[in-house]
Image (cartoon, rainbow, N blue to C red):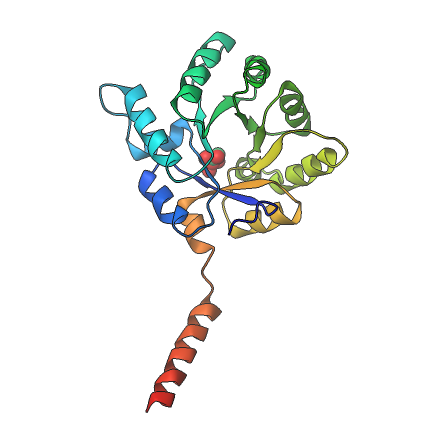
Length: 227
Ligand code: G3P
């Protein structure tokens, strides 16, 4: 059973095998992709980049109800064209738009058309508020990149959730650029709606050395009972 009042967990990847593997655990609520992740998988080296990307995204839509597909245009007209194309592929697709003034126009347009959006590259509370007011369904603050720059990424999440508690934004806060389990712990403590997690980090989450040691001890004791 899925408990939707809990923090949603997304996989941050463009690898469809990873999505199938983690989805089988019964804990996966969505996937976030971006051009860098797609390039890492080398999936767009064919003749038709659009066709390859579409294939990857549609495969993911079989496993989860929410797949973010990012526009690469930087102007409103281009974002509108790309986003409408992505949204026509599958109802699970969420159009990912960068946090720029052109992006704000696109968020507002997509909201008016009932197309779901995720605003990427959010690094401040004012950016978060503008994106939510423009109509974003999801905003994605990048906590790891703030940490890399010598700032405190999770402090931003805490501040955004505090601001959100005063208003009725129809906009979920997605903690992105997570690098270690502490980011996921704090995301849940601060009440973030969604956390997107890279594959290697996701694989670490079910593991604890005391769990392994405990299983071994149970099995060893069971062997003694059998004798
Ligand atoms: O979801 C955003 C994420 O892919 C960015 O992660 O590690 O490149 O900062 P990173």
